[in-house]
Image 1 (tube, rainbow, N blue to C red):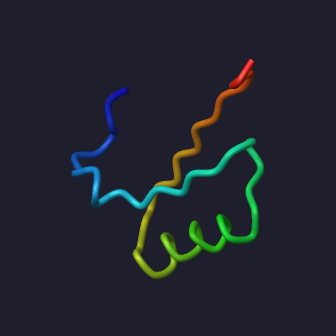
Image 2: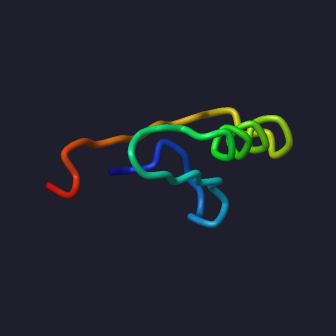
Length: 52
């Protein structure tokens, strides 16, 4: 997969979780990324049937 922007990995705020369910902590991380760090794009990637 190619990134849609030119950025080094450490410049991209990442929020990882298991189970495709967003908790309050993860929501807070996303809010911090957008409101404080100024992120303008949110990309959500998910998959299913992991661990089967």
